[in-house]
Image (cartoon, rainbow, N blue to C red; front, side, top):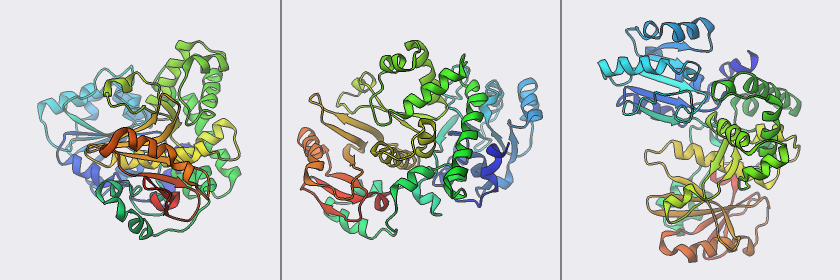
Length: 415
């Protein structure tokens, strides 16, 4: 229980999604906040300004869970709006929520949280379609750990003329940081904010993995062998930023391809695995092209993989985590994609938003060179005016144009 409740003992850091939860509760009868365990969902729904006016129930409490499973309608008989934490532990409770909402559609009736993507869980037959709005809470951004409820400055690259990018970046407050230490801490509140030494963080991550393996993942899928499942997680974390080849993974870990497919889906449904689709002009082709794989948290990914020194892929993952939080806070969510040409050239991330494309390359070097931006130039020549000038995110301190197509910018200035 130390692992489960540690986040509640930390000083509360406001989150980017907080005002969005309040806004949506004024318009929809049900708001569902999902995300991995320990990202701070329970804390957010108990600390945001309107929380004190709501009844709060957690399905982590056994008596509440029993009532939800045996007498769900009685749990929902309360005069005040209701918040229910970890609703994925009793999927049938959603049917009772649906019945209440269909009788009387009052905005803000239910605020639900879940450590699994309810839309991807096979055991969930009721998705509250037309009644609920969904938000995803990712691990804390770099700005959130500093006490600012925000993500990176990605919106500004779409809103400003590219000639103004440098000035806008230079106005951002911050100091040069070691990206490796930021990667090691990750974004889960406890290790990111309160555990300063590597051994304490290792203990926390080990407890997290045990808790997740022994209980939470069983809410999503039937795992026949925890040993095999742990081996698959390690193999995946060693492949950060690579395209997912399930046949290759199955061969390497000694499992059948259907089992690998099922376990990867379970990891994605429980917000551990993140798949990034490939960009294509024809959107239906994005469903066919092979996605790239990342993890929800860089510190946890390093622990699972048994790695002590961060790689360039971990820096990519750090940037991705910020992009996902930024995306979650927007009404018209941008698409976060990657691009790979038939000849092998690749762009780490392509953000598609409001008819524009922003290419982003991530390099774990303090001194980027002109040739590092070559793929950005190729991408822009391929997609013309739709493609904005690109960003080359690096680990140094200098912001400068590498070419007419690409601006080199330190990672700690954009996230």
